[in-house]
Every structure is written in structure tokens, then in C-alpha cells.
Image (cartoon, rainbow, N blue to C red; front, side, top):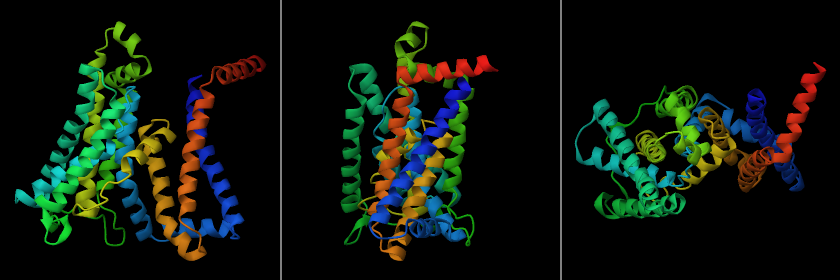
Length: 353
């Protein structure tokens, strides 16, 4: 039974992606273009050279962080929709540190990343504290905090740390930039941090007692409470850790790619992370894989448009279809009638064997 459930969790996202690409191909065909040629341009834009692969990984990096944010909190049964705000706050705290402290080099990078992580954790703890103490809906609180973080960032880059007449902050010192792997493969080492967190999160959730208890709270908080689990503590813990991951992601994005804050920084990453986590069935490693697929679509979209004169909106449609089919497929498999059907098929197969 466990093998069947795990297989379903893999098959549903794979089928969703394939069906979305098929429908996207039909739309491209209706536009009078060759879908096979179009997808050739799409994938060549993402994989055509080592430099393009590196750029795809750079795009995937923040998506991995925000998808891990959503996956970790959702496993505890709480809905942290504030990944974008926590991502932004982590970057804001880091830009203050690197531009005001004077600390440079590797120590400056490490301390800045730590400050971004702690800031994200504090920002993430706010909806958690309000939930367990006042019973407030964490989705509403975390979404509203996204707007607060965005407006605060706007205040920072237009006034406090504004670089002359341009509405953006000062650039971080060159010595605090996260180095790239190589000149021929220019992806910064922040991708290594993201992948490490994906594997570490998977190990924690599925191979430690604390992870088991956290998942138990997510499956049934009432039953977990009567079995002696500190439910409120795990809820707050999930918000703090997910916020820390998002804050670290914002700091990594600042030091590895953006190098300064300006309008649009972090925009959309939070809700993209939620979608990616849902497609990946809240699996941290699966989230990293789906984030890479989304990055492939985004990196190849410009090549698709220039090579075939196909609008980049096609890529947005494919992404939306993947989300719809993945969520719908997961919900379908959880229906009692579908569970009974697969159970009967399993019993019949065991009987014939």
C-alpha cells in the first residue's frame, strides 16, 4: 500500500506535466506553428549550452527556497502563504548589514546570510504566534505581511538606502558576492545551499522522530494532541523554520544574482513556491525538481518567442495547466471511491498471485 501511494505521488506530477505540454503543443499548432520545433527552441534556450544551463539553475534557485518554505509548513498542516514577504525581509536585512557594517569577504557573506535567515524566521513566526495565541487565520495574516514587507522594501530602496536619483539601493560590495562555480558554468554557489536544504528537509521530515511528529500534527492535530504531542510548539516551529528558509533564500538571491534591491525584487516567488510544492506533493526533493522544470520554462520562453514568434504567454499557460492537473489529480486520488477502487485492484492482484 505504501509503495502504491508513493508511486501515485510520482505519477501524478509526471502525467500532469506531460498533459500540460501536449495541450500547450495543441495551442501552438492552432497558432500555425510547429509544436515540435517550438519545444526544440524552448529546450535549447534552457539547455543549449553550459552557460544556459547555469542560467536556468540561477532562475531555479529562489524557486527552490520558496517551494521548500511552503512544503515544510504544509507538512505540519498550516498554510504559510507569506514566503514572498519572508524572502524579501531576509534580503532587506542583509542589504542593511552589508552596506552599513563594513564587514566584507567570506565572513561578511556568512553573517549576512545568517542575518537574512534569522530575519525571515522572525517574520515567519508572526503568523504562527498569532495563530496559536489568538486563533487568527494564518493564511490571511501571512498574505497581509507580504504587502507589509514589499512596502517596507520600497521605503528602503527609495529613501533609507537609495542610490542617488535611481530608486534602488546601493549595490553590495564586490567581496560579498557569492562566487560562481566557474566562468564557463556561471551559476553561483547559492544553488548548492538550496539543494542541500532540499535533501536535509527530506531527511528531517521522513527519517527523524521530530519530522514524524511534525507530519503527525499535520495529518491530525487533534489526535496528535491527545497522544501527547506539543501541537502548538510544532506549529510555531514549522512557521519559524519555513520563514528561515525563505529569508535565507532572499539573502542568497541578493548576494548571488540581484546584488541590490529595487522594484520587483522577489515578486511572485512566494506563490510560485506554493504551486511548486503542491505539484511536488510537498516532497522537498520533488520541490527542487519541479522548481527546475519551472525554471526551464522561464529560461526557454524568450528563445521560443524570438525563434518561433510564439508569445511567452504560452509558457504561462503550460505552467498553469501543470498546477491545475497536479492538484486535480491529487484530489481525485484522495476521493474515497478512488481509494476503494485501487484497494480492490490491489486485493485482486494479490489473489491472482
